[in-house]
Length: 189
Image 1 (cartoon, rainbow, N blue to C red):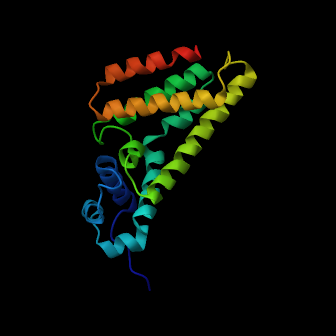
Image 2: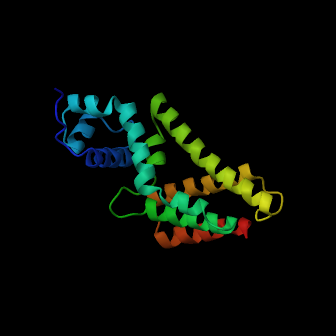
């Protein structure tokens, strides 16, 4: 008979997420993780695998808990509304008081091991592809006007998003970040 799990998986993942978000991938040790998660190292390996496996699960949980705004944005009726909703949701995430400021992917990924880089590259690619697909749809319906390519529109939005997250990490006010988002919407009007 297997051992019973004596901890809440979601709470443990949330604790690991906070550690990676606050300290980055490389700055977070296994000792930091086990202390924050309230488990011993053998349990970490047994239930979560190695550090890369745990980080992959944390990134999935980040999507589920903190990036729900992405689906809401992609469902917007116009490309201008897509961009507005995306940036507003991002600003909420990167400035929330109960979590570290900034974005998990940027905070954790500035300096990280190859496994972490691979996880984040795949994660970013999925988000960029979803935005590109939405902008391509807008191009077909005539909502994305001018010569702006769907790939460039997605790249632009993600570049602005990264800048907003970095400024939030540095302590920028929500009001200033909202003004930056407002300016970023201009090419889509």
